[in-house]
Image 1: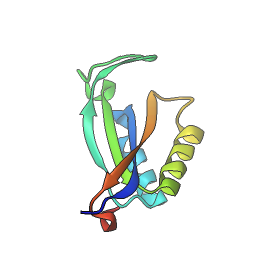
Image 2: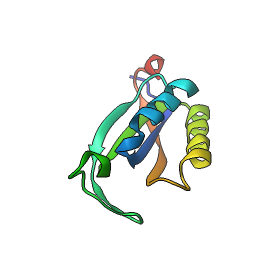
Image 3: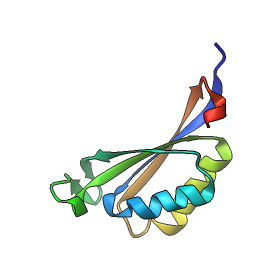
Image 4: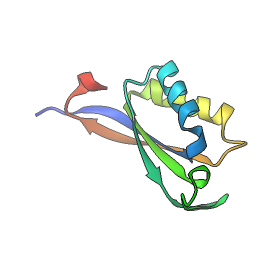
Length: 100
């Protein structure tokens, strides 16, 4: 079976940003995404999700190069300075390219 190259963009952010981030993903043309709860510690302290406002979410988007770059640029311009948020991009291969 043939595989096709795509990018896996992972965003870890304050859970309070979920609605704003999903709106941004829709606006930029993401075909879909997966959201899960996340916990951890980083430069802005412990994010343990004991309270809804102190939790993190993990958003994963499988997409092409251009969309991954557009999302990363948007996050950099609008969120990085003021929020606990990181993003990273990994090369992946998919078996159903029409889904992404």
